[in-house]
Structures are given as structure tokens and as C-alpha cells.
Amino acid sequence: MAKKEIIQKADAVQAPRKPRYPDRKVLRQKSETYSNFYANNVEITVSPWDMRLRFGQILEADEEKLVLEEYSTVFMSPQHAKAFAQILQAHIDKYEASFGQLKEPSELSSAVWAEDDNSIAQ
Image: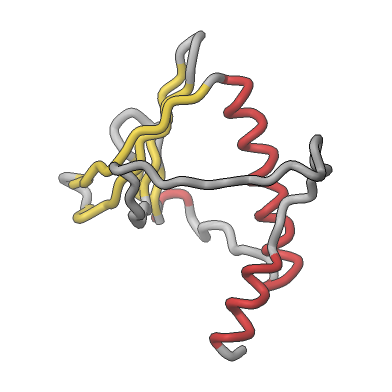
């Protein structure tokens, strides 16, 4: 598949949604602290009031140590986290419909777990 075709297909992956206000304009502004980053590790912490998603990258992993570089933490209410999970699943379903089934890790033991069992990376 050509790179241009992949980009076009990726752009077509949208979560199903019905706009509440179909005529409303959406204006996006980036804050002064806005940044992009790659994450291959997410740690999730839960409390009765919020959920925290701490994003980072695994720099080194072996049986003796796991070295993580943390980039950002996102806080959200449990209700927002549930809505986010539903939207994320819808995007994954559409991605798989376009590009094929994502493979699960072949063996759980080959994954690297963080000490608190709240994160995983393959």
C-alpha cells in the first residue's frame, strides 16, 4: 500500500458521532505549552474522583530494570474516561476494518510490565 493511500485511509478513520449542534463552528487553538510526543507506555491511576493517564516512553527494559521517560499526565473524570474509552474503541474498530485485525501479544510473559501493573508495553 502506498504511503499516500495509507494517509488517506487513516484520515478516513472517524468515530461514529451525531453532532449535537450540527451548525456550530469548531475553532481550535493550541496553548503555549502544546506539544506532540510519542508514547509506548501509559500508566493509569484511579481514584474515586478522577483517572490519571501518565504517558511516556520506555527507554530500556530488561529483567532487572525498566527505564521510563515520562512526558505528560492527563487527568479526567471517570465519566469522561468512559466516554473516551468508547470513542477510542470505535476508532480501533474502524482502523481494523480499514487495515485488518490488530494482533494481540503472542505471549503475556513477553510483555514488559511496570512495577504497579498499571502499564504495559510490547
